[in-house]
Amino acid sequence: MPLFLKPVLKDKVWGGKKLTTFGYDLPSDTVGEAWTISAHQSGRCEITTGRFSGCTLDEVWDSHRELFGDFPSHEFPLMTKLIDAQGPLSIHVHPDDAYAYENEDGQYGKSECWYIVEAEPGAEIIYGFKDEEAPDNLTRLQQQDYDGLFNKVEVQAGDFYYVPAGMVHSIGAGVLVYETMQSSDVSYRLYDYGREYDKNHRGLNKTQAFEVLETPDIENVSTTDVEYRENHKRTQLVSNDFFTMVKWEISGTLNYMKPREFVLVSVIDGQGEVITDGEIFAIEKGSNFILTSHDLDTVFEGDFELIISYL
Image (cartoon, rainbow, N blue to C red; front, top):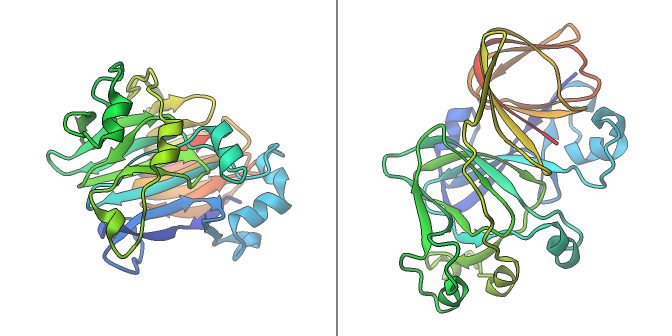
């Protein structure tokens, strides 16, 4: 039986109300994140169906590792989110595994990737420096000389970006993102539009940010690997040492073969059913679940779009 999960909703100074379109009952008008599949200590998703109903994902990971192919990691390795940026996120950077392990109590580093679900006209992201090779990037950051420093990219629905650890980045106002990442909650803020001085005491982390900043040689790998299986469109968005992320556009019936012992599944549009070993489960936009190593025969039926992520 799949592990269906209840998202953890996070209030943010830049959040909004768009996550209601995923069927979530928001506690405020400033919900910026739904941690849709997470076992992280800062946001543990609760399982809502089956014999583990009421347990959190980390509890099942710790006590029933066989459901995950006995994967040899102390912590559940991946996390998925929906991000509603009503305002811009801080300009920030994440550490890699080595830095986080040493300086953040053994946490994972944080490489991540973004699938743009919605974007208002003219909405932008910050994706690295405008000139990654410029020798004065760090000096300009230290002097808070931000004019023309960052690479601002106008985005639209369907775009995809891979954001490795060490890359300076931000999501701008008016963008709704589905994110797959390493299971980490470590961000170092460089600039926060003055919000570091508000009642939330968000704070900046410039010392750590300068220590982990890198200028990776990165390409936008959006829609580079498209194929059709049983007449359904499969787009591999990224595949690297940290995760693989695939978008499926399904209309009708798909006999699905898991590529790994367990996979993370989110429905980002439409509705239908997932059938595992003869059991039928209704799914719709906003549904999130894990197909475990015990879910051997899986069929998707309906008209929907899925994001499937795995190691």
